[in-house]
Amino acid sequence: MLADPRARLGAGIAALLATAGDVRRDRVGPTEARAFRAVNGLPDSLYAPAWVVMQMGAFGAVPAAAATAWLAGEGELAGRLLVGGTSAWALSKLVKQVVRRPRPVALLPGTRCRGRDATGLGYLSGHAAVAVALGVAALPQLSPAGRVLTLSAIPLVGLTRIYVGAHLPLDVAGGLALGLAVEAAAGLVTPRLLTLPGHNAWSSWRHWPAWRRRSYPAAVRRSSTSCAPSSRNEVACQQIGAAHRELPW
Image 1 (tube, helix red, strand yellow):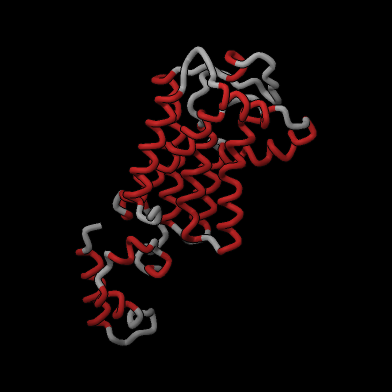
Image 2 (cartoon, rainbow, N blue to C red; image 1 turned 90 degrees about the horizontal axis):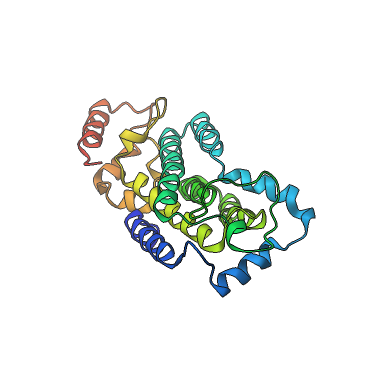
């Protein structure tokens, strides 16, 4: 079901509203406090690997991921990573100003802060939002092993933010929801608007998400295999190219 970006968009918005409605500016619920202390109280020796994982949700990961995709010839993916990651980071700043929940250290005595002190507001986690926006967008292009690694890393980014004392669990949940919604919205935007120069978005339709392949005319799909660079059927190739340009997306 979540293969459809419209379903991801709805699920992300619903989860975002639910978590935002549960947070309080002046207190933390007992269940959330217990979950926070369980992660925040882990040994200090874990900080080094936690810091490495945490960088996957930093804003710097956005241009790095987009550049990697572009260099690999995936122009459309590069555009989605750049737009989705940047939007997730920017919108997280906006949501913070609306909800205005403080950081854990201001709400829970005994919070252990590791690394650089987190400034600003708590809800929601921008790191979690960026990690989801980048990871989910890249999933269709990854190998099975790469997908497992990415799906494992996304929640770890949120857990590391709890571990260093920067966010509470609902902050992370809200960030994950925002990232999912933003990534889905980016996936619904016309691919031509998101494709960076230097990539033929039509040449790799077999790598497109299932929801896009279903909307691709069957006759054009069957004919596209005959339009390789070595094909002599120039008229058929021109007809297929015209069909591509007439597609609504």
